[in-house]
Length: 97
Image (cartoon, rainbow, N blue to C red; front, side):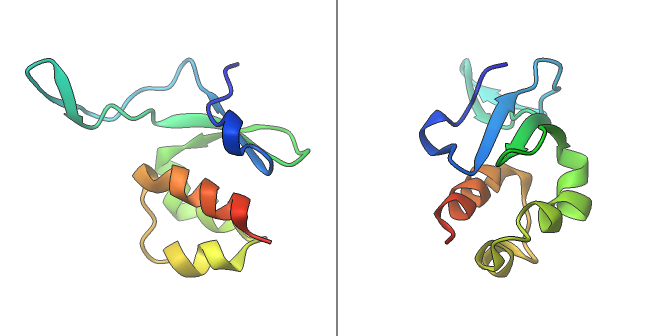
């Protein structure tokens, strides 16, 4: 599988899900303006086994569980969890001490 975050993968590795569907995209003149984001990825935290992270489960079930080791992430994004900001959550978690 292809690692999607090689530059900041010290704590969390995100892998492409070849079977993931994409969010609805809007295009203008051949350019995608919005959407087109994968709805699932494979995620590995530390040495644990990778699991499939789905958009529909992220806000309700996975967000708190994934970032429980870093209260700063939960404090910063706790109530306003958005799948589109997954990269920001991973970056903040990677910088957490």
